[in-house]
Amino acid sequence: MRIAVISDLHGNLPALEAVLTDIEDRMVDTVVNLGDLVSGGLAPAATADRLMELGHLTVRGNHERQLLQNRYDQMSMSDRFAHDQLTEAHRAWFASLPLTAEVAPGVLAFHGTPHDDVVYLLETVDPDGAGPATEQQITARLGEYATWPLLLCGHTHLQRQVRLGTGALIVNPGSAGWPAYDDDKPYPHVMESGSPHARYAIVDDASGHWEAELLAVEYDWEAAARLADSNGRPDIAGQLRTGRAG
Image 1 (cartoon, helix red, strand yellow):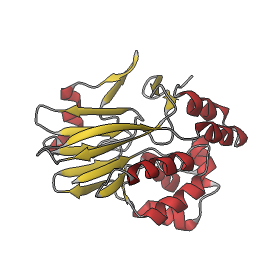
Image 2 (cartoon, helix red, strand yellow):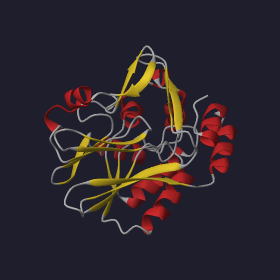
Image 3 (cartoon, helix red, strand yellow):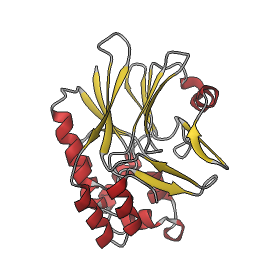
Image 4 (cartoon, one colour):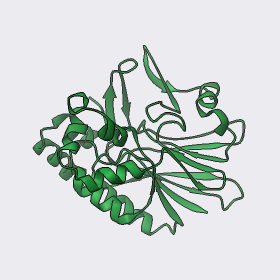
């Protein structure tokens, strides 16, 4: 089986279209979307419309949950921007999305970890910033899923693959739509891809075990950055142009 995996679009419709074009040439069997679909500074409603039209298997990200559950005064700037443009049809779709989805036998898709959509799986944040998690930390966060052959996660925007001692392959496709960000919880840290490309992954079991190809796609990120600027988000515009948080 050959699966295209995308995540963390954050309303970046031009990046999504570029990734979809790239996927067309790679003869995949299915496309899986790992959530954080529209919140950001770009085009939340248009992106939601396109994703609903595509009908890909999609799991809920933390931003979809926050848009449904948080009071407006509790929302981040990115969530408020999305909230103001979304329709009841969009919200109903978000509410229908599962926390996890079994894509195929032994293949689990989720946003953060299988149990929590805001916990990083492959990274750990401490007072010195973010760095790779240990295998022990990863296994503990996976719990009963640590022996599944293929685990697909997003949330950190960092494109990585890790094979555990159990044989499980964990793949984070990176962010298709937002290549860098900074956060202050639980400690101040940055997540940076280092370039403005739209990222995704292809996973394939043709060899008899799961293997991943991590891909980076060029698109008109300058146009996306100008849109963020026009929507009052120069911080996001800079991140889209550089793949750096600062």
